[in-house]
Structure formats: C-alpha cells, structure tokens
Length: 495
Ligand code: NAD
Image (cartoon, rainbow, N blue to C red):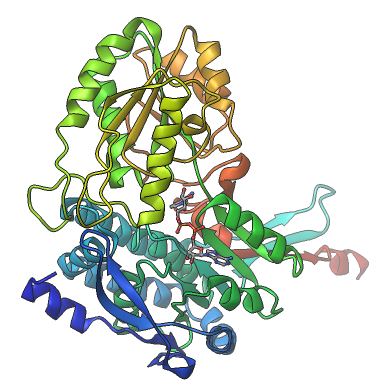
C-alpha cells in the first residue's frame, strides 16, 4: 500500500478500544497487526483487548442499558437515520478500507457498503414500529396485554468476510430495539468496525450503548462476558464449530442466542432452465465476495442433459475473472483472506482430484505475494467427496449432475447445513415444489443473490438459529412481556 489517499485514510481510523464513549488503549498497551491480504504487509495495528478490557466494556453496556432502553423509539430511529446518511456520505472511505483489510475488489466493497448502510436505514424505520397488543381473553372476561421490551446488553461477534454489513446487521436492530452492546469484530478486519463506531458516535449514540473490543484472544475475552449474568443476549456470525461452542457456553446462563453460521448452498440447474440466466446466476452465487460468503454456491447441481452446455459457458465466464489486488481497477477477483484459507481451498481441490474429479479450469496456487487462488471449476464431483461436504470459502465451483428432481432434492439436503439454495427453472410449480422440499432458510429462484435488508436472513439445521434483517430482525433483540388484567367490567357488575 503506497497510495497517499489510503495512508491518509488509515491514519484517520481510530485504533483503540471504544468503551463508555471513549477511545482507550488495551491493558498493557497490547496491539494486534492488521494485514493487507493482497500484499501480505502490515497496514497498521489496533488495540488487542484482554479479558479485563472485555469486562470493562460490559460494565459500560450494563450501566447504559436502563436509560437507553427508555429512550423514545423515534430518538433511536433518528440516530440510525443519521448514521445511514453519514456512512453513505463516507461510502468511498469505507469501501477502500474494506478492500485494504479484507481484499475484495473495490466495486464489491462499494456494493457491501451500500448493503451494510441499508441495515441502518431499514432499522431506523423499524424502531417506531415495535408493536404490542391488548386483547380480550377467549372467555370474554380478562384482558391480555402484550408488550415488547429490549432484551438487554448484547454481545455481538462478527466475521471478517463482510466487515461492515455483518456489523450493521446486528448493531442496527439492537439500537432500534433499545439494547446496549459489546461488539467484537474479527481481528482480521477490525478497521471497518472501528470507523463505523466513530460514525455511530458522531451520529449521536450515547456513551455506553455501543462498545467495541478488538482482540487476538476471542475465546478469552468473550468467555467471561457470556458467563456474566448481566449479559442477556449473544448474536454470533461465523463458522459452525465456533457457533456450536458458543451455544454450549451460552446455555449456562440460558442466554438468548442468534447464530448465523456456515453454509453449503446447492445451486440446482434444471433441464428447462434458461441456461444463460443459470450461468449468470451461478457466477454471482459462486463468485460474489470471491466465494468467501456463507451463501456462496458450494455445490452446483446440473441436470445431466444440460451438463455439457452449462459447463462450457460457465467455464468461459469463470475464465474471464481477473485476479489481482482489490484496489487495482482491472481486478475482478481479489485474494483470499489468509494463507490458512488458501491452503484449505487448495487441499479440497487436490482431494477431489485424488478422488476422481476433473479440473476444467484453474486449480493451481499462483506464485508470488498475497493469498491468491484462481477461479476454478471442478467437474465429476460426487456428493460424498469432501469438496461437496465442506464449506469451500473460495472461488472454486464443484459441478455434479442429477437425473430427476427427487435426486436433486436428496443431494441438496444431504448436508448438516441449511442456509440457502438456488434453483433455476422456467416452471413455477416446479420451483415452488423445490421451495417446499429443500431444507434451507432461504431460497433464490432464478437469481444468484438473496441477501436483502428487508428480508429475513438465516438458516436451519447447523446453519444457525434466528433471522437478521426484515421485520423479523428486530425481534431477536426484544423480549415479549405479557400482563394479565382482571376483567375491567368485573367491578361494575359487582357494584
Ligand atoms: P470464525 O468462526 O472463525 O470467526 C467468527 C468470529 O468469531 C470472529 O470474530 C472470531 O474472532 C470469533 N471467534 C473465533 N473463535 C472464538 C471463540 N472461541 N469464542 C468467541 N469468539 C470466537 O469464522 P470466520 O472465519 O471469521 O468467518 C467465516 C465463517 O462465517 C464461515 O463459516 C461463514 O459461512 C460464516 N458466515 C456466516 C454468515 C451467516 O449469516 N450465516 C455470514 C457470514 C459468514
């Protein structure tokens, strides 16, 4: 990174912990390195929190909860709306920062900032719509009053793959609901979360509502918070193994949990699909975010009769990606996040070849700096191969075939995951039959993208619990309180 604009931008991002409305250093002044995955160079350092720093953040969130929970919904809405406008005004700074620390091409970072900002706007509109009800009991006598209140201090843990959107998808509904929070962003991409925190502060969020701790010791810092009875909610986005561990820890306090975990999305191309549309959809579903997305198409299931035609066109489109640093204008595919991820992707491809699959494109780690991996098409994949069972998280498309819809459904459902599926067909009844049979939380019909701030995002099976976005998203941060009331006419009758 030698661009003076980027150097100025980096120098403007706060690098401390944000606790009780102030930027502070970590205990002992410890720092962690933030690395540019395209060049392997250290961009800057940020505070590396200790367990005591994490608890100080929870202290602040707990202190702020009572008064924050009583603020007018309109006041919370207006803070979110201001934050939406400020993020939008600084969209280019956010996009450059995402590309620097995460590696995706600038065009994709810009799209993420737009998507991430939308959660601030969406939930600014949801805050004044928190409902309740007053009803007559079935016997016509007593009254039932049901109201919502904020669940209380939350711990929000986010991954590195969408550094702004995964944060706003939690922060915005928590603010709208009247919760305070401790955010722990991924240590691989903390800068975007820190700039976002600065913006939230400038948008008028009171001290203690949003606290942020960055750390290389996620288990050590979050463990004591999850065990602390002052914490009332854990919302996690990340891998299934870590999610499972956190759920076990959360069970001790019977904490409310939301879990947005891994995926293994099937993308089904039926014989009656518009093949051009299916190829474009598959390219989007596979290559958005360089394949580093929980909703990435992980298994492409093609009807045997259209396999050759699909593979030929798909391979051509995959071959058109330009691999390079995300800040170069010609780049359409950036590096993977780190060496560990790259060797996992490489191992999966090599393993598939050993088990009898073929490589129609890519498949070789390039020489040189940065964690690059080329667009890769693997054919002849079987459902039992590791590449079809594990989340790939890279630009690798395994292609398998099926002979009828029942087989497609069987293969698609033969996984512990259940986040999303995609189906390409011109037959609406067929698409709806798939929607009823596929074990997923989300389905895309003739589209490779389902993410939308107005829609409930989330999975079934080991892809998680709860939903983010949509009208459902705020419910994760609200408790339902029921008040039973004696028949108001009882006294009148008695008199
Ligand atoms: P990860 O599970 O390694 O880390 C996620 C977060 O958890 C990070 O902040 C990390 O520091 C923290 N963490 C790690 N170990 C922890 C521990 N023991 N205790 C507490 N926190 C801990 O996942 P990742 O590699 O950052 O992200 C990729 C994964 O996230 C993929 O599996 C992907 O599918 C998933 N993901 C899911 C969604 C969704 O909405 N379902 C969205 C994006 C990413």
